[in-house]
Length: 484
Image (cartoon, rainbow, N blue to C red; front, side):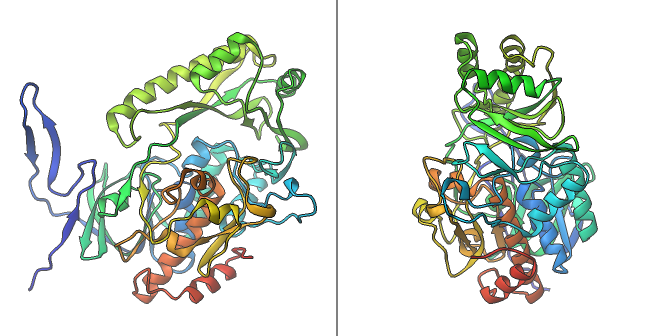
C-alpha cells in the first residue's frame, strides 16, 4: 500500500510528535535532545473536533452536535466555561448600547445557544438576568452576571444532552497535517496519548494551541495584562455600596435577581476608586479592579487582580512567576478590603481561578482581519455569521449609533488551512478592535458560527472555504442567531 506523506506541525513551544524535552546543559553552548521512541497511538474518529471547552468551545461543540455531527470536545481542565467562570465579571453583551443613544430602540442582538445558557441558568438561580444598568450605561446597557459553579454544571449538562463526547483533563499535544488540511489532533491525558481524526476542527483554546501545532501563522502581541479573579465571601453588599456612594466612587450600578430575589444590587463599583491614600496606592500596586458582580447574597463573584507580564503568556517559566505574584496580590486585596471598606471587615477568599486568565495569547492570521473602523462604523459584510454591539473601551469607543457590526465568516478561517476554524480571543490584530471581539458574548457567538460551519463541512465532506455561505446563513437563522 502506498504511504502518504504527513507533516507533523511543530509549534513554537516545542511540542511535536517524536520530539520530547529540549534542554541545555549547564555550562554547555549546545542543547541536548531526547529522542522519543516511535509509538502506535490509538485512533478515535469524529466528524468534528473542538479544542478548548471555554467560552466559545462549549457553544461550538453544542452547535456542531445539534447539526448531527459526531463531535468531541477537548478541555484541559476538569470542567467547562473558561474565561466566563474564571476571569470575567459579567457576560458582555447580549444587547446593543441603546441607553447611550437616546431614541435608539433596545434590541437583543445575540441569541441562539448563548441565550439558551442564560435561560437554563435563570431556572436554577445561576444568573441575574439581563439587568439594565442604572448608571454608567454608556459602557453597557445591561449586566448579565452568572454564578461560576452553576455555569459549569449547566454547560456540561447541555453538552451531554447534545451528545457531545467530552474529554476533560485532556491536553492538545500536537496536530497531524496532510497537505493543507488537518488530518488529526494528538491529545494527552492520564489515559495516555491518542490521535483524534476528524473531518473538521475548531480551535477555541484561547491560546490558539491547535492552530499553532497545525502550522497556522500567528503572532504573540502580549498587549494585555493577565489576571486571576477571586470570589469574596462574607461581604455586606448594601453597606459596601453605600460606602462607595458616599465617596462618589460608585460609577457602575445594576439591579437584578440575587439569591432568588428581584431588584437587588448585582453589579457595582468604579473604574477609579478614591478611598484613602493607603488604599489607592495599594490597589494600584496589585492591579485591583473594584468593579464586581454577584448572584448571591454576601458574595462578590469576581474581583480581578491584574498583572502585566514582560513576555507572552505562552511562556511557561514567566507564567510560573506570574501565578505566584497574582496569588500574593489576592491576599493583599483582601487585607485592603478588610482595613478600608465597610462591609468587608470579615471578608475572605472563597474562590480563585485554577490558573491565570488571559485576554490574548496567540493571534491567528485569518482570511479577514476585523478593523476598528469596521466596528466603529457599524459595518456589515456579505458573509456575516452573527452581529455584535459591545465595546469594552466605551464610552471612549462605541459601535456607531448604538447599532451592531458583523463578524464575517472569513474572520474565523486561519490562512492556509482548509478544515480549521478558530473562535474566541485569537482573531483581530488591532488592539482597540480586539477590545470588542474578545468579549465573552462575542466569543460565544463566534463559537456557534464556527461549530455550525464545521458540522456542515463535515456533512458535505468539503473544506471551510467551499461551504456555501447561503447554507450556513440559513442554518444559523434557523437556530435563532440574530442578523440585522
